Image 1 (cartoon, rainbow, N blue to C red):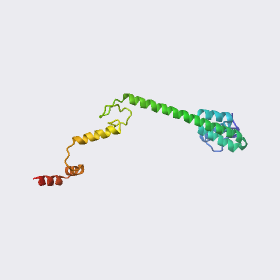
Image 2: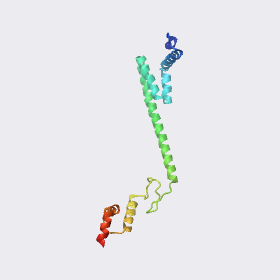
Image 3: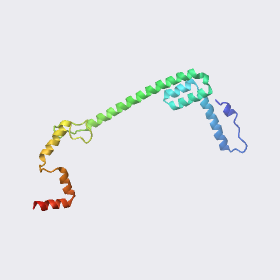
Image 4: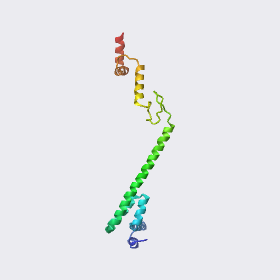
Length: 174
């Protein structure tokens, strides 16, 4: 398994043991990386879903042996196909997970419309009505309950927040 990089490594004069071992490990992993630059290893990486490492192996393989371009093209086509399959599988899993969570939330939701009494389980969290029709009906019912004074809501709000206007109104009415 050892390649030429490991066989030729010797301690340099004045080099510490740790520095020598670091260089030796780097050389060993470099040899291992070169050994993995074959079709079998790249396919196994792609099959596992380790696409970035497979691409790195293929790039270095091309730099080392450009004549193997046809093998690399086949591996690239396999990588693209496998990545698409994996993406579809993950998307299907995510869709199923969202669907199940949505169904679980809807099963525990017992809210009803305040106007017509229909279920509003699949509506947004703060919803009080089941449809725009019910929302308008609720709004109109609320308007009919409030007394009509002929003044706008804005003037009432201004009086509430400005005591001088409130005093002026009471003086006018006397």
